[in-house]
Image 1 (cartoon, helix red, strand yellow):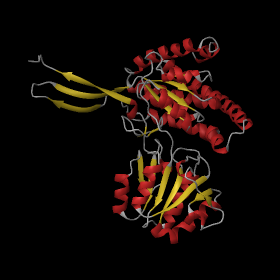
Image 2 (cartoon, one colour; image 1 turned 90 degrees about the horizontal axis):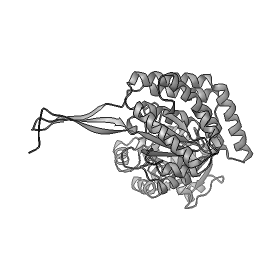
Image 3 (cartoon, one colour; image 1 turned 90 degrees about the vertical axis):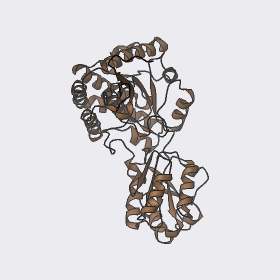
Image 4 (tube, helix red, strand yellow; image 1 turned 180 degrees about the horizontal axis):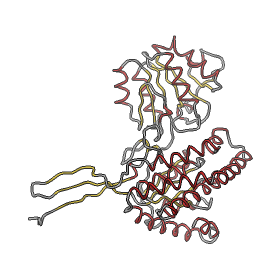
Length: 429
C-alpha cells in the first residue's frame, strides 16, 4: 500500500526499493495475462477516482507550486508543474482515452508457414516493469502509469522532489481505482522519497525487477540515466526543435505556425527553439516574423541579418544554437537554402522534432527524407510532438534514439514480442 510504503521510507532505502521492485514484478506477471476489458474498466475507474480526489490533488499541487516559487523557480518550470481544475480534468480524460485504445497485447504482428509445415506467429507481449524517472510534470504520473497498465506492464514512478506531493496524490487515486477494478494495486507504484540514491538503484535494475527505464526531464537527468543505466533506456536528451521557413513558404502561414510553435506553451519539449529563414525569402519574411515574436513578448537572439531587422534583437552566440530554452526565447538565423538549413539542424539539433514551411512539395519531400529526427513535419507546428496528437491517447515520452521505440512512446511502443510456433509433430533432421 502506498501509505505503508511512505511510513517505512525512512528505514532502509535499499530494502524499500527492492520491495517496490518485487511487488512490481508480481503485478506485471498478473497484468500480462488479464483480458483487455478488465484492464479498460479498471483504468476508467482510476480516472473516476482521480476526479473524486481533485481537492486533495490540487491542494498538494498548491504546496508544490508554492515551494517552487519560494526557491525562485523560473516561470516555464512553474507552468509545467501547475495543475488547475481544467488541467486535472484533462489528465483524467487522458486516462479514459488510454482505456479506449486498442489493446496492444496479443496482436499478431506477423504470420508465416515454413515448407516443413511449422506455422510461426510473432505476437506482441508486455515489456514487464517500466521505470519512469521524471521531474516537474505531475501529469506524467497518470499518463505513464495508465499507458503501462494498458500495455500489460507495471510502472515504478520516481517523481522529482518539486512535484512529489502532487504525484503521490495522483498515484494514490489511480491505485485506488485499479484495486477497485480488480487489478493489482501495485501495477502503479511511486517512489515515496526524494533521496537521489533511489534513482541510482532504479538505474541498476532493482536486481532484475526493471526491464526498461524512461527518463522525462532536463539534460542533466537524462544524461545521468544514459550514462549509468544497466537496463535499456527510452530517452531523449533534449528538444532542440527547429522551424525552417523555406523560400516558397506562405508568409501568413509562417506567421501563424511560428507563433504557435514557439509560444503556445514554451515549456514543453516540442516548443520551437530555433527559427531558420531562407535567404531567398528573408526580404519579405524575416522582418514580419521577428517583429511578431518580439511584439508577443518573445526574446529574439539572432545572427547579423536578424539583428539588422530590429534593435530589440540581441546577438546569438554559438551556445544559443545548442540551447533548449523552454522559455519565451528563440534563436533566429538566415540560411542559404535547404541544404544549409538541414546542415544546421544536423549540427545543432537533438533529433527530436523539426518542421519545414513551404509550398514546394519537392523541397518538403527532401526535408522529410533527409532530416534525421524522430518527428519531421511539413507546414505544421512542432507543438504537435505529442502522443495525444498522434492518436496514441497519451505518451510516456518522446524517444529520440533509433532502437525499438522512436518518437512518441505510446501503448504500442511499450510492448515487445515473442514467437509462437505451431507444429504437427515435426522433428528437426
